[in-house]
Length: 392
Image (tube, rainbow, N blue to C red):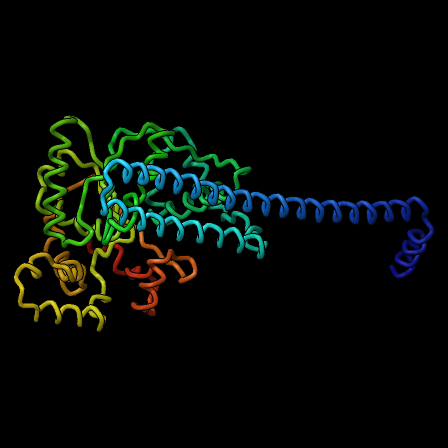
């Protein structure tokens, strides 16, 4: 056995064909390895350029919209010569400046740190299988209940579409399809400081590309749940009177989600007939502990000591807001009233988490004053922005 082994080695060492083949394999392997590295480098450069182009597009968009809004307000000032319009112009200018500054910051951070652009989509085999099912014409959400949770389904869809959004050359297989309901956007606390209601620009994009109808009922960003629930009741009932047969999908942002829950509880019959579902985004469904902050407690005490009934009735210190949002109030309210909410096709809740440097200027301020050890978006802790397990 040993002699055969030795002889075999000798033959291999002296076989010119074998040696030549061995060298060819090594050369090919080295060449393939080099080509692979070059391909990876090209791919990384392409992604970097894509992300830069995306950030540049965001700057251009912010410039265009800001300029249009400022020109419109300047035109209004020329016609009305109203001091109130001048204040609105200054307010819009401040908002536009923050928006542009944030857009430029994102562009510079992407330029300086190319690692931000190099991440790839990473799906497990199970997630790839799920994605293929989602793009199928025969897809039915009920077929996935035993295999995937709604959280897992959302995660796959979000990661796929977010990647496609940030990399224009990547074409997602997921396609949005038109649906028959009208979107109702309900904004949150101090929504008046923004030039448009939350997510209205996104809804306008849906309207343009998919023909989706949407409305933005007026709510008071400085008022509590009772006031805004009544405002929603009046406006949505009037809308249905003028648009019989339409189905509504309410999307509530921040306190708008809490206002909507109170509206639904008091309008159960109307909701079951005309509303298909409710989606809360970053809403303090179970309230927030930040209302116990010493600053807000001080404001509350100050409000109680004010003698003027006129000032109290105007609620200039916004006591009604943080009373409506306190965890002690809202958690108890939900536990007592969730059984009285209308039976809709769906209730969904999406919680957000953001680091201080990812937030806009208003959230930077709230993160500074209302610090929390729990994941949050600046105001609402994640565990308070989701429906409790008992809510089936």
